[in-house]
Length: 106
Image 1 (tube, rainbow, N blue to C red):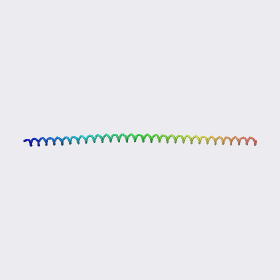
Image 2 (cartoon, one colour):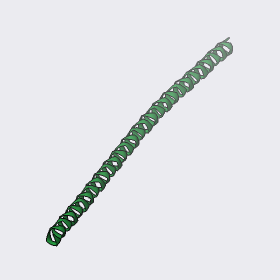
Image 3 (spheres, rainbow, N blue to C red):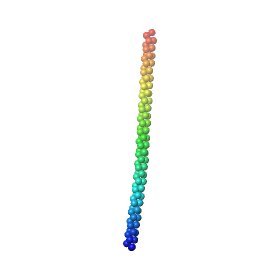
Image 4 (tube, helix red, strand yellow):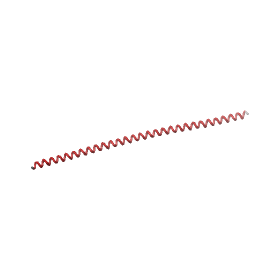
């Protein structure tokens, strides 16, 4: 009877030990999954931030290009206006010279 009781107790202890190990493994698996989910969330957050920074940089670059293009266009228009005034003045001068010559011939 003693042997049977000891065998029953040993079996019960072994069963409890297996059960405990199974529970520990399940707890470890759950912890691993939580850690993995946390790391994935962190990676996604960093990727989102990186994408946002890149978008901001591209927007800044586009704004800078637009600003330079506007400045170049303004400068081109100013140059054209300057050349137009120069040509107008040259024509006025030629006209005045022609009038003076015509008056001198009279």
